Length: 360
Image (cartoon, helix red, strand yellow):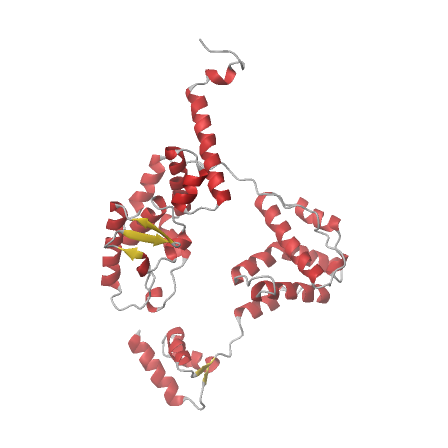
């Protein structure tokens, strides 16, 4: 990679006409020689010799997605999406993925309204109900939330007179009862974890209840092998023997495979070894695709097992795993329901006994 970047710099700098090199000019040159555009641009950008004249992907996506809307609706929706992406006086910027998901949820409705109306102010409460009544489950919940975001923005910017989604309650999404994994399901995922990375990821999920995002963001400085301490999401915890062993295996593999990387993250791959960012979520979860015991299920199983073993105490769960109060209460409630159902199964006569009578 170093050799290819060096070669690319020689080619570009020897043929440059001005003080800076446009991205649109260097791209075909490097591609013709099979050289890395991204890495070469990183070096040129560091020394201030590249001019990025590319059209941002967000702009081209926005233009394509809103092309079929009525002009006034187009303008209102575009302003809403840009505010989501860039943030506002009282709102934080959202990721491109979130903005894409928002538009994807309401675009069919916007196309339908564009055939009937010129402005979003013409959309009534009945029109909103017609959209959400045709949906069920999570899709209905999500679409209504996005529509509320859109029309609240339009009301705030005074492009509509009345918010048709006002007093339409999204409601709390019904949650399924969390169930522990079966031993066979856990054994299946343990069998496929043959690489040092996969074994480490399984341990961090199943022992420390770490989310994939937390695992991806772990830094080398978060691991203290000498004092046997590990810091996950700002919370320091002791290292058990199994986690200590898996960390040592992974760090040895990491040093052998990428000895000169400058990436500070604990987990890296061939791509991120030449960068400083974390690996993708897919890189962690790909090995366990198709198995019941996913990393998320292993995390839930660990927290539920703690509640079943030490009692459904939300304060204990919050202290051990750093859960927020609502999440801790939800796990404690799930554990209590499981313990109650187990007790009833073991003593079925107690369910049919009239209250106030003692059993012989």
